[in-house]
Image (cartoon, helix red, strand yellow):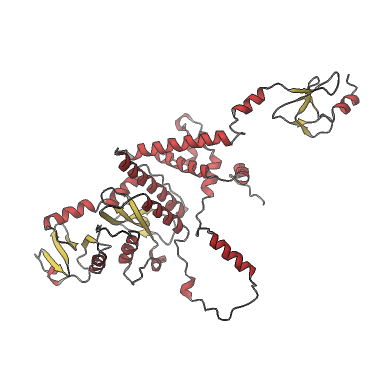
Amino acid sequence: MFLIKNKFNSYFFLYVTKGITRDDIIAFIGIRMYMGLHKYPNFEFYWNDSQIYQNVVSKIMSKTYFFLISKALHFPEKEDKDDDKEKKGKKNETDTDEIDDTQEEIKPDDLRVDPRKKFKLYLEKLAQNFQRYYVLGKNITIDESILQFKGRNNMKFYIPMKPHKWGFKIHLLCDSDTHYLYNMLFDPGKAGKDFINYEDNSSLAESVVLRLLTCIKDNKQRNLFCDGWYSSISLMKKLTKMGYLITTILRTNSKELPSKIKLEGYERAEHDGIYIQKYEGKKTILFATNYLVDKEELRNIYNIKNRGVDTFDQYLEISSIQRRTKKWYKKIFLFGVDASIINAKILCELRTGRSYTTNRFKEKIVEHIFKLYMDSRKKNDKYNNPSVDNKKEKEKPARSLNLNKTHNVGHIVNSKRPCKNCGKKTPYICVECNIPLHPECFTNYHNANKTK
C-alpha cells in the first residue's frame, strides 16, 4: 500500500492500525448533532483556538480524524450473509472454461440499475427499526417531504410551491396523532420510476401509497389521510377492498368523477360508496371519503389529521444537522439520523409521560455520547490518555543492575535512547555516567574508555 500525500495522512496511521470503530462513528454523529445545536460558519471553526469559538469538540476528537471519518463514509449495496459467501465459494470452485449453451439472452431491461442502490439498504434498515419499536395508531398520514439539495443529480426534483424548491423527494407514512415516522419511500424521479411501480400496473401515485402500506400487516381498521397528488377514485376503491377508511382531496380534473359533482352549486355526491363533498372558498376543493360523515365535520377532520407529515417536517428543521455538501448521499444519511432522533424523542415522551423540547432532547443525547466516548478512550487509548498505572510507573526510580563494582546499569521506564557503544536504542543507562548503554555493551564500553 502506498499513500497519497494529503491533509488526511497525518492521522492515517490510526485508520490502518486501529481502524474506525463503532464508538468513533457514534462520536462522529454526536459531534454532528452538537454542530446542529451550535452552528458556526465552517467546520474548521469548531477547532479554532480563539475564545469566540471555544467548545468541547476539540477535546472529543481531532479535526483530521473527524474529516477522515466523514470522507470514509460508505453505504453497502448488499448485506453480507453467510449464504452469499457460500455461493461465491462454489462459483470459484467450478471450471470457468465451460460455456453453457442454454444460457438465456440478456435483455436491455435487465441491464438497468436502480439509482437508489447506494442507500436503499440503509433506508430499509431504518424503516425496519422504526416499525419494530412502535405500534401504529388508528389515523395515519401519507405525504411527501423535500430534502434540500442543489447539486447535480438526476434524482433531484424542482417543486416551486415548496419552501425548498430543489431537492430529493421522500414519501413518508406517519402517525397522525403522535407524528411518528413509520415508513418511507425514496422517489428516484424519472431516472427510476419503474422500480417503484406496484405489481398491478397502477399509476405512480397509487404505487407509492400501496408500497408504503405493505409494512402494515395487522388487520386493524385505519383511517388514511393524503392530499390530491396521491388520491384518485381507483385508489379509493382499492383501499376500500383492503379495509382502509380514506379521507382525501380530489382534483377537479381527476378521472372517474361523477357527472353531478361538476354541476355548479351541487354540494354532495355519492359514487360506488365514495362520498364527495364540494367546498367553495378561494378555490374549489373536493373532499372525498369512503365512509359516511357529516359534511361540516369532514373538512375539520381532514385539516386536523392530515398534519402528521407536516409536523414531522417541522421537527426535522429544528437544529438540523444538515449542511451544504456536494456529496448527495450524505444528505440522505443525515436525514436518517435526524429522523431517528425525532422518533426517539416521541418514544421517550410516550414512555415517560413527559414532554421534551427537541433541542433539550438532543443536548441530553450529545452529553451521553460524549461521556461514553471519553470513558472508552481512557480505557483503551493508553498513549494519548495514560492511565493511573502508567503514571505510577513513571514515578518509580531506576532499577539498578550490579554488573561492575563501581558502575551500575539502571532501567528507565518508557524511554529509549541510542546506545553509546552499538548505536541501537536501549531503555538502560549507566547510573554513574548517565550514558545509555545495553547491559551487554556495559563492560566493553568502560574498558575501552578506561573508566574505573
